[in-house]
Amino acid sequence: MSEKLNDNSNGKLEDFAKKDSSDSIKKYYVYILRCIDSTLYTGYTVDLKERIKKHNMGVASKYTRARLPVEMVYSEELSTKSLAMKREIQIKKFKKAEKENMIKKNMIKENLNKELK
Image 1 (cartoon, rainbow, N blue to C red):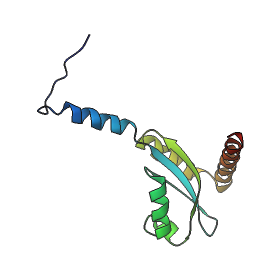
Image 2 (cartoon, helix red, strand yellow):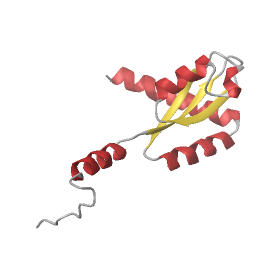
Image 3 (tube, rainbow, N blue to C red):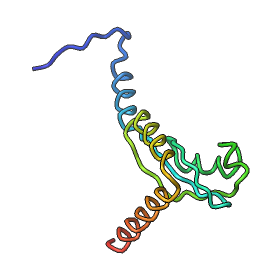
Image 4 (cartoon, rainbow, N blue to C red):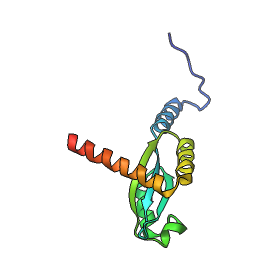
């Protein structure tokens, strides 16, 4: 059984399908940076490599600009911008010790995964 889709775009159904599929695979990330003074900075982005690069160039954040260089020590992948922003706010409310614990657990997990490969 097939249904006919309404075409209000003058033969552009393919464009709609392409846009829809690319939006559904977009990923969002929450990350934690360790600054040169050992403070932690939390943010969200769609491109981790580019965002870290911008932080280290001093153009991403006023906070990190004064604490260069920075190193990414934690990241999470989320499916929507809304979830990423909510998670960022949640992490920002954590005490530094809680963030350090998250970072430590993540590093242990990453090392274990490397050993198993």
